[in-house]
Length: 252
Ligand SMILES: Nc1ncnc2c1ncn2[C@@H]1O[C@H](COP(=O)(O)OP(=O)(O)O)[C@@H](O)[C@H]1O
Ligand SMILES: [Mg+2]
Image (cartoon, rainbow, N blue to C red; front, side, top):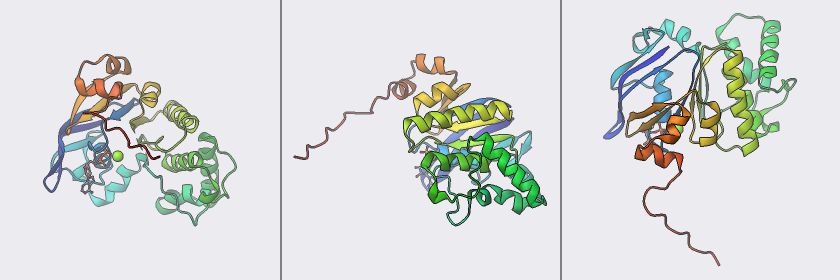
C-alpha cells in the first residue's frame, strides 16, 4: 500500500501540490485525472522518489521513502515499473536490449535466463518475437508496449502510467487500456494511471481521484464521478471549456 500524507511541492513561487492526502490500496487500478499542468506527473515523480516533497511524506508498504538509504533505494525502485510520456527507448539498441537493460544492470542473471524473461514479457504485451527489431521499426503503439514490457521486467508490485494513450489513435489507445487491465489481473499489481481520456477512465478505473489546485478534490468510482455535482469534476466529465471559447479565425 502507498500512503501519501500532506504532500506539498512548490517550484519557486509556483505552488503545485498543496497537501495531497491519498492512500492507494494493493491490487487496485487507480486513475488520476486533472487539468493539464495541475501536478499529476509531479505527483507520480514523488511516488518514484524522483522528486522530494517540501512538506509531507510518502509511505510505501509502511516505509517512509525519503528516509530510505541509498543502498535500499534500488530495492524500493525495483518494486515500481513505470511508463512515462514518450516512453523513451534507446534508438541504437534492439527491443530485446531495451527491455533487458534493468536485468543486466541490477541482477546477475545469465543471458539465457534474461532472454527467457524478455520473451515472457513480450508475450505478455502481445508482441512475441520482435526481440531483434529496432525502435525505429515500431509503430507508436508498439513502442508503448515495448516500454510496458520494460516496465514489468523486474516484476514490480506497482505500475505507474503517465498518460499512456496520449498521442495514440483510438484503436491503439483501446489496446493499451486493455493491456493495462490484463496486466493488473495477471500480475496482481497495483496500477496508478494518469490520463485525461474519459473513455480510458471508464474502462480502467476501480477508483478515480481528481487533482485540482494541488489537492485531491474527488475520490470515488466512475459512476460517482459521472454523477458528481462538483463543478470542476462536472466540467471534466462533460469536457466543458473554462470561460468563453474563442472562435478560430478562418483561413481563406
Ligand atoms: N522540474 C520542474 N521545475 C519547475 N516546474 C515544474 C517542474 N516539473 C513540473 N513543474 C511545473 O509543475 C506544474 C505541474 O506539472 P505536471 O505535474 O507536469 O502537470 P500535469 O498535471 O500536466 O502532469 C506545471 O506548472 C509545471 O510547469
Ligand atoms: Mg503530466
